[in-house]
Length: 448
Image (cartoon, rainbow, N blue to C red; front, side):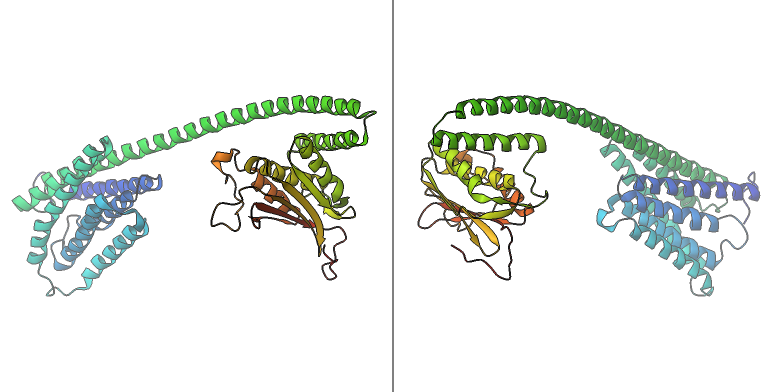
């Protein structure tokens, strides 16, 4: 069928092809918007526009045979599928992702092409044309109104312009259905072309704004990362200054203990030795951050480590006694045992102040077992064992819940375990198990 008077058929074909190219470009932009993270609805919009631009408009190019049953059925199936996808894009759920709309578009295209194989008597041209005239304008109008409402609700200019472009296409469809003009009518083609160009411009604006938003977000993240790097550098500088001052203070205290220990009696010398040992451990902590549980293994005597810590606590007023086998030797780093026992004794002092504390160390099989028992209030009611978690603590007793967590981590890295359970009949028992020196699990040594 040729165009109306004043619009040659070749011009109608060119304008229709231009409209198809514009719609296809709009479909690409809509999918880009979906990939930029603006929601799954744009994949539904892209699938609808792609089906309209690739199938509906090319098959609607004015020419001979356009009104035969086959082409009419193709236009009907593809047009209705595209409009259903366009309407679904207004309420597209996120869980379907991008695969479903494109799958439906492909199915609609296959169904439309299959219409060419139908015999001329299967569907009358009048019935298909009547269906197109009734449903298509209404569906275009509904989609246009939906996008206009969405644009106003989100205060989005591109969404609003998209709705207006769809409204112009809907006006073209209403105009053709009301007047019955042929598909090559100049007014219909011009309105449709204006509508799809507005849709193309609206989606181009939307993608431009989305890209600008992504860039702004990236710039913001880069600024936050830069600020975080500056904060980390400040923390490192403050940490270095603090460590420097701590080293100086520890060195001064070490010199003082040497002076105080000279000429003292045996008890004072024992206390001085314990203080020196603890100062040395603290100095190592400042240098290395924590006890080197994963360092090279070596054998060490357990009794001097435990006895020194018990002496320090006893000098501070804690009612504490120790029972340690002098021949007991462990494998690993003595600083690990010292740090863990220090944390456990501090825990006793905090949660059971004034209660008697006993420390017992012995060998059991291939392990060195150190038990720290207090006669305090014990674990909370209903708990026979206390899970050691980071930050878990009793707010009434103070602290931050770090000591037990750090101790458990150190013991685990040293190849042992830390257990906390209720004492009998009262109190709490913390048990540390570490590898014993020369352990032979096949021939365990007799336990005490």
